[in-house]
Length: 531
Image (cartoon, rainbow, N blue to C red; front, side):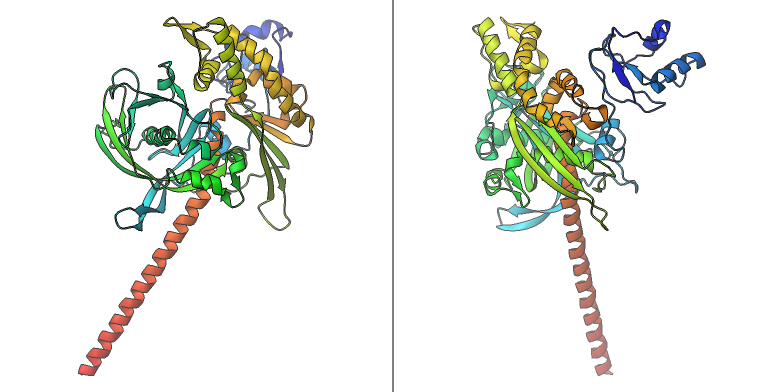
């Protein structure tokens, strides 16, 4: 497989220009399938190797020789060569292939469920839309099957909230109102106001009672519906103004591993979820152009799962929910989030005579996530610009985009952020080293922190591990991986619900046929008596 060399390494002399000519824009080495991931901080500004099948023969041979001899230019950082199993859901999402099984069937998108009718005080059958939300401290991440297309809609919104002065559009922000609440902005729109409020962090009992967070999660779900193509659309697919109808949601929800056991959510987490369970939400959305739409929403069923275990499931299961064929017997997911750093260790043990291996899982929080670095950035900025004080949500935002507003002007703070990362990353590294030194496990790095600190972590990992013993989830997928895995887990619950409905319908059909048969028999007997 390919191995990296630095910019100072002698690289095929005069043939360097031939290779450089084919470093274009998206990293895909297609003919031999060696590599498909973005390369960071390359000598020629993120240039990547692309198709070579149309090259002249001499140039093609040079490229092929480089690959066969195991040399690949990726300056500054090493390049991993381990990839997810091609049948796994993770591999399909990374490659962008349609999410269809061998019968050309996609993910379950609608599920039979029940909704509590507040007028009749009884349960009413409904058909619910399938969705998944990873309830992270730093941001909510969600995925949902796209309407009429075999792909997933993805949405990430930082957990920032600020009241809007008035319900308006046309200023580049989406404005929200939930159940007649104050008008508000959320996520990046809230952060741009420089007055963002941080929503509660921690475990579910600290978060769900907050009315702002309830509005936030309802608005988030509506935005996910919009991304997935739901709502009333015109011929061009554009969302139309006005009422969009009623949406019941079958929600797979990611909770901290401490809040989930083999029986599902813990009692404390279940009590917290009741704040939004079967609660009707009327959500008014005013888009950037001022178009107003109204959505009626209800979360009718929850499938709780442990967040970090969700990432493992995306790596381990196929679209149909079957385990991949793998010789890895100990898998550790290191999920570096904004607020927390979790690990999930899974032992995969084959069982004689059974197709599914036995899984033994242990998940726990081993430290805080990038919030420690974000708070360091906040303190460093306060010291240099004494009138600027950042909330946790704003500090996380600065950590990612490295910009602040000073005197009304946008100003880069690259040096401050880099210095804080260099001084505080050792804390995270110390948590990771013991897993690197435990050589009997396969490591998978995911979460927003693994993207933010990618180069530092990759250098650290390469000093302890061979390339086939770890995997960094690509940056465009890492923030969503827990939600993608949660959707896989929810498919099993959805299939059971569908099977129950089909069984109930079969019973009703049988009873109806028996009633018809009895009626026909009675009529026949009556007719015979008359004769």
